[in-house]
Image (cartoon, rainbow, N blue to C red; front, side, top):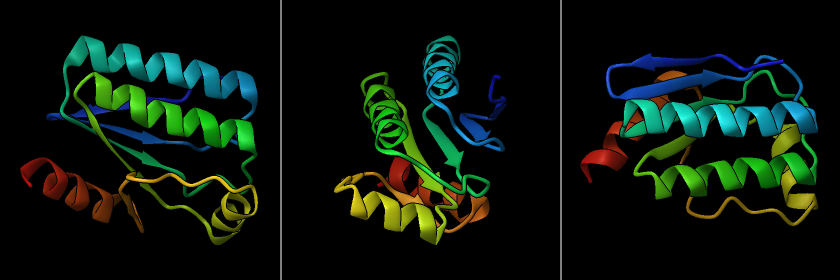
Length: 118
């Protein structure tokens, strides 16, 4: 299953509406990096509102996506992290250090603009 990646001006918007399994996460990573390379966007917002659970491998993939995007010149903001997902990340000892987050997609776009301007 592929996760849709939408382009809006100089940004990519990604809303993950499915539970992430290993294969979907890897496919998403490849698709996002290809889309960044094709479009040359400056920022991306990944909305995790619909993600109920996350494991250490998926968290690692998300962290890698943020780092790889940065290497391509694209700033990533994560939005909509549910409390259960945040608790799981902390319990697993996973920190998404230096990864901007926001409560929802609208605030994520505002945060992305701030990150790119500052």
